[in-house]
Image (cartoon, rainbow, N blue to C red):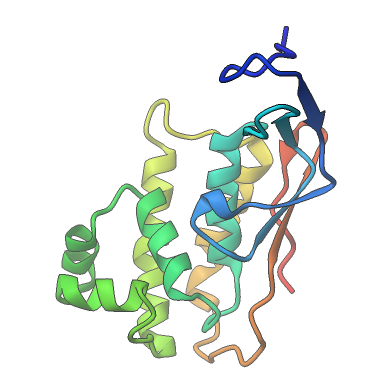
Length: 187
């Protein structure tokens, strides 16, 4: 049973369930969750506690969603997110891409960008590493339909067009339905 008292000041806690929530805790500024979030706010000291339902699954679904975005649409923060979800250090990723660690750091900070071919190679490395990680015991929180999406993405990856997207970056909106986070459909 959830406490209705603040852990800091023993004040009364008010529960909020927002329809949408900007999920900045992910390290990305353009992710909006549609449901699946509870916010406890103390009426006395204003302390906030945010709880995301099945957050481990959400983080992996977000990675899948980013990998499905059109070529040329990944920013530095998204590249950093994908690297971290794969459990890679900047040096580890640099070794896999045959570049210097400083190059990876510059791209993640937005100081340099990747041409379509470079992003294609980055995605290939991250997709394979992510897939391997999801096969490790106790790591994957993906549901059956998520695992199928990952399998389909890997199977179709070599056919991705090598042309950059000219569309502006939109917020990634991740809905929660039937107790599971859903992968947004590609635009």
